Image 1 (tube, rainbow, N blue to C red):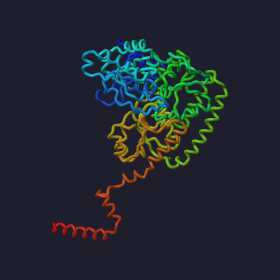
Image 2: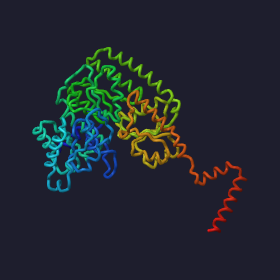
Image 3: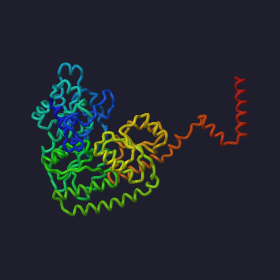
Image 4: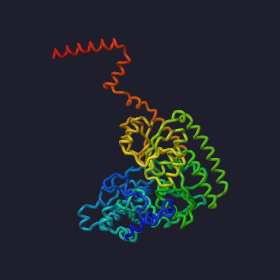
Length: 494
């Protein structure tokens, strides 16, 4: 069995996954994700998932070993914002050609590319990603990276997550394995405090973690590292010295959280910063675990005081919007942690969830949705585009929240749409993020453009008939007679 196959089986045999523990040995070997359909856009491959997790390490270089098309466009691809370095946004690729593959030049070209990146940018580390092509032809990126680390004096880290290995979610976990094996624990922090925490699975999309960090700063809680939003390589490498891990998405990095607890004694919990209640619960859990780890006991009281203050402020700011949005119906078509965290946030302001999807959702995610919606049947595994269009066209939802790939279905159905996925530019996390989300919903749903686009076109026969019925029939008859006479006269003149 290859090293990749062993690693995939290890990830599938995750002891911290409740669903996995209930399987037989035979079922467990099949893995957690359904196999991808060849030729279908299935929401990303393992390579894509690994890059999603690792690329927000903003001062590192990310080098793709494969054909040019595998790299694509990394500049602002997911809007994982940085407070400083911009190197992570630059695309680096070995750009293998057919000649390189046939002649076996892949490893030589990789070594040359690593040297060029170091010479041009001198990053603190380089992540080298294998792809389907280079994995199939057998390029040994581990050996090349090991040689480069020795010769160049900086970490060159192999990321063995070719696209054919599986889904994007599997790639997330393989990236976690890479961090555990090659990065975390390799450096010591310059400063360490009793209130240091890490946040796993937080990528600072649209800079939304910056709306949460001030809350933690007020409590004296230091975020040593987000893994990996706006992260620096040295902070990730020394993350093992923190006291607590908060896991934002169990579908992504539960294997990393569990291994860090076993090796370095970092307790972890899963939480969300979407919505008022979930943000408050996350702060409480962080404070409680830190106190158990030796932080001052007054941290719990200070946390409760801050929560009371922030909740009073946010509900006052939300008051004007709650009346306007109460009873509005939302179709939520997203996945993973957002399938339940956003549901919770929307329900807090009186919005009705007519349907929510379970795509990429873990059993834990599904259980939370069930707890929020009760026995509500409006939960979808998937929805075909034609069904989604019919659903919206019939007016069963006032707005759809989804990613960019489904926006045109909503717009074709003349239904308001708001981006809730990683491509968005608006931050929705924390108390302030909740206000921003509600403001966007209000502005989108109540935009006067929807009344215009839904109105019948002037040339629509049914519209003319409806207009004629509202006018005195005698005026209509005189108008039609005069129009017919004018048309006949024009025809004779021609």
